[in-house]
Image (tube, rainbow, N blue to C red; front, side, top):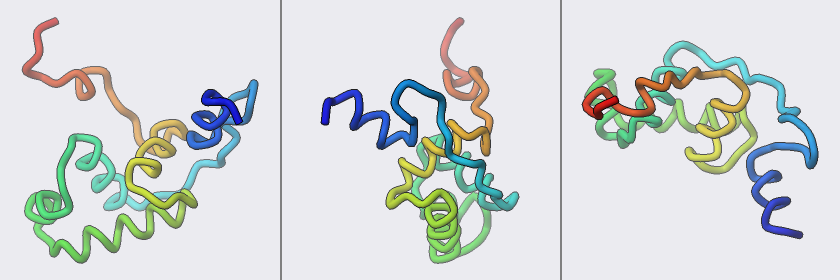
Length: 100
């Protein structure tokens, strides 16, 4: 298997085509959790921000991974972005403190 094929299969992209993974139906809380994860927050930090326990955050991550049929947070985040389950704005991705 070539490097490109392994990257495509890890990202859920069919060789020579667009992603064919159907969009998972995320709850509002799961979407918020993923957005905090995208911003680099840990489970502990997300729990403090969302005013819940770290176990609750990890429970949401477990559900997110199950819905996307992946085994890691990073894979779930990648699939969520690719499928459009979460929208990453260029301003958010770049950071508000960086100059234009």
